[in-house]
Length: 139
Image (cartoon, rainbow, N blue to C red; front, side):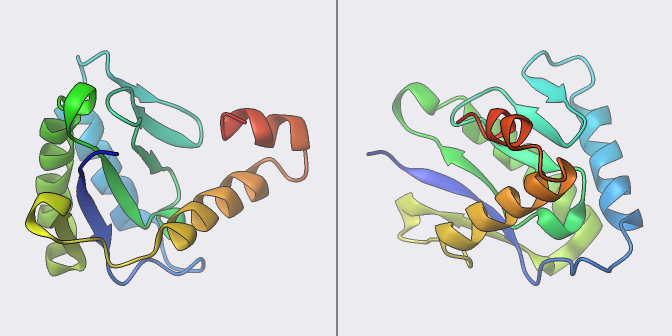
């Protein structure tokens, strides 16, 4: 077990929405962490190699939550979550909803919805290549 914290995008982007605002957000995130080896920009996601490896998808419609365990060996992840949260607030205002289990708060979305949005995005990006799809989900 452990304590999670993070933020959700409420409401999330629809699949047909413009990705411009999301791309500007990602650009600012990459600028903020440009010299940080923990932050790895990938083709489909920006991966933060800390805690539970939170990710930001390249497509805004696939994003629901940015979070990680922040207790025990995952303690270093909270400072990354807070910095990304602040950038998100600058771009999306009150659509960014912070939560922290230490304060008896949980995210807006259930975990199944969070995981399903990511899986669907990666699956569609790999257009049916099951081996690549499973590898990208670390299966």
